[in-house]
Length: 107
Length: 121
Image 1 (spheres, each protein chain N blue to C red):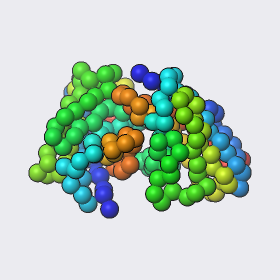
Image 2 (image 1 turned 90 degrees about the vertical axis):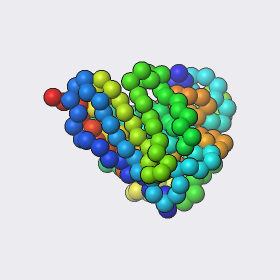
Image 3 (image 1 turned 90 degrees about the horizontal axis):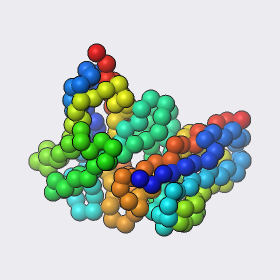
């Protein structure tokens, strides 16, 4: 299985901060990397697919980059509704695997 | 707007079989380029893909669960189902059904709200 490792596991930030979350794959996965946001008590919501493509309806302050084994999710200016847990997911091969999550909290 | 809704018992006894159904509305389950899948999340933990099915019945499962999992589809009812046998407390989790867009980059683009299943006697 491909292991996905996110860092940090948790992060405290303020509204209007720029935040970056990193995801590392245990092997080369090309651009087969997706990002999801999950709020408490809710299902995950797709933000970014194929490493850098913004899902329809997702605000442009979210962006993704990377290829191979190292990927980043950036929120350019944090809004109150962005405080949530973020997961990366590799879709290069089955079993599809997720990172352990990064919990973004209000400072 | 596509919607998915899980249903099934919230409490299952150890060693028994967990059975859940996902009803899809707002679009046909028999669509090209889409698989339908199950993902679970133990309380306070991360996400684990269980398996996925195509409307033709073609399946693929997470090897870690493969010996205990069966996913089936009923196109006439626009729904698909999960069966997980010989459950233990480790199977206690929120279970989500989701659409897997297999067109290019496999992404879970629509999710159900989830249903909590507790394994306990």
